[in-house]
Image (cartoon, rainbow, N blue to C red; front, side, top):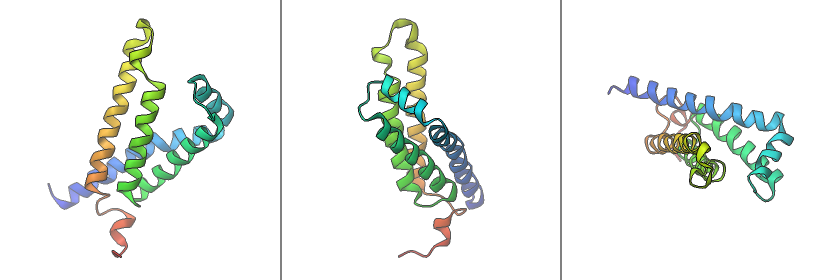
Length: 137
C-alpha cells in the first residue's frame, strides 16, 4: 500500500470514529439528565459522575482522533470505554430471550469497534495528523 493511500485510510478511520463518538458525547452534554437516568437504569452507582466521565471521554478522545493527537492513547481509552459500555449496557447473556438477538448484535458491534480502535492504536495516526507535524521529544 502506498504511503498516500495508507495516510488517507488512517485519516478516514479517524474521521469515522469521530463521527461515532463526538455526537454521542455532545448528546450526553445536551441531554445530561436523560443520560444520567439511562445510566441509573442500568444499575450503575454514581450515575452523574459516570455521565460526566463518559461525555468527556467521548468528546475529548474523538477530537484527539480527528486531529491525530495522541492517537494511540485516545484509541485505547475509547476501546476501554466501549468495552465497559458493552458489558454494562448490552449484556446479552442476561437478557430475556426476546431481546437476545438485538442485544447480542449491539455487544458484538462494540467488540468490532474495539478491534478497529486497537488497529488504529497500533498503526498510529498516519501522515495527516498533528502528531506527524510535531517533532519527536
